[in-house]
Length: 78
Image (cartoon, rainbow, N blue to C red; front, side, top):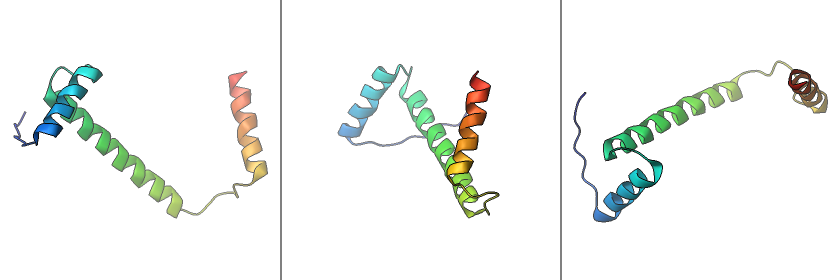
């Protein structure tokens, strides 16, 4: 594993230390790694959403479409 040194103003260092304590992270490094992973997940999800938004719709998302989804969900829950 590589090491990266970062500099933070006192207010941000205090915030990071508080987050480490509150979230149960063992170290500051674990907290920063968690933030980076979340950012990667958000970027991936954003990409999927943009890809979906740019794609052609298979069926119109009207009231009948959503009613069909409800029936499918309720059928699986039963």
